[in-house]
Image (tube, rainbow, N blue to C red; front, side, top):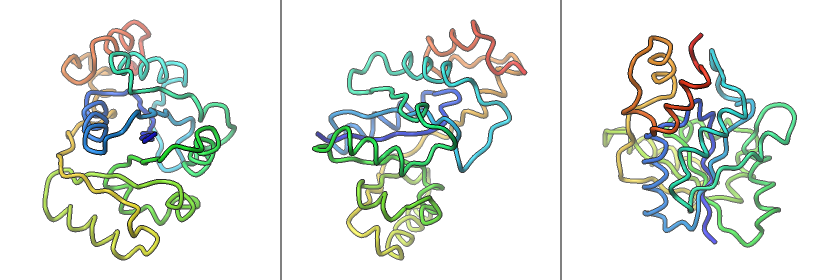
Amino acid sequence: MKTGIFGGAFNPIHKGHLALAENYYKSLGLDRIFFIPTSLPPHKTSEYLAPAEDRLNMARIATAQNPAFVVSDIEFDRQGKSYTYDTVMQLKADFPEDEFFLIIGADQFLTFHEWYRYEDILDMVTLCTSARESEQEKRKLYEYAAKCDKMRGRYYIANYPVIRLSSSQIREKVKNKEDISHLVPYGVEKYILEKGLYIV
């Protein structure tokens, strides 16, 4: 089975995440994609990280219409920061016959050599990313991959554009009582408002 791994804070999950996952699902011929909200992201901080339960619930609401999208709470069973290496190791143990594709952003791709045990991760997955807009950025991705010997034959750079949308923009709009209906699925918007998330 071909399985995508899509991790992130998902704080909150939005339409950009879903569009990206759909593109990878189709272009790579994946059987499923695991959406894995991080417990304590090691590479980023947030002025407001919604509780784990809320981020999991929003991810489940957002992906409910696609049976190939599976939300996993795998990272919340561990103590401390969420390292991708640990997550991939556990998934390999749980699904030993699967071929894994790790989906990350272009900025993360260009600093992948700084990740914890990145070479071991590359032994277990195909690394997937996409340039946001320009051909120049796409060249940077290919040049970086060429310099990293361990990446040879272990990466996929997509040709489709990435929607320029961030969770921080959505949190700011919620805080300012602005409309977010065009940025997140209806159920996620309803959940945020009912729970009073991102108000302060």
